[in-house]
Amino acid sequence: MARQYGIAEKAVLDRSRPEAFKLVVYRLRLEANLTLREVAALAGVSAPRVSQIQAEMEKIMPIK
Image 1 (cartoon, rainbow, N blue to C red):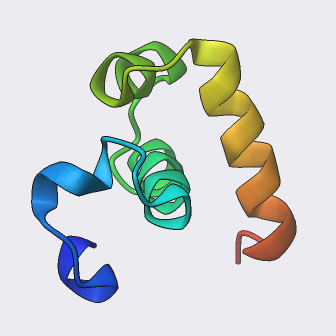
Image 2 (image 1 turned 30 degrees about the vertical axis):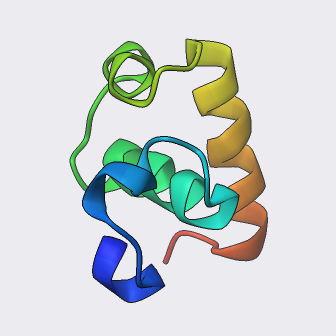
C-alpha cells in the first residue's frame, strides 16, 4: 500500500495521507479479516471510527 502511494510504510498508519490511511483500515477489515477492535488498535483510532471508515470506503469501493 505504501508503495502504491509513494510514501514510507510508517506513514500509511500515521494519517498524514488520509486516502492511504482509510484504504489500509478498509483492507485490514476485509482482507485480513480483523475485528473492529484489532484494526482500531493497529490504526490508533476507535472501533466506531473504523466502522465509519469502512462504511465510507464501501460507498466508493463496493464489495464484489
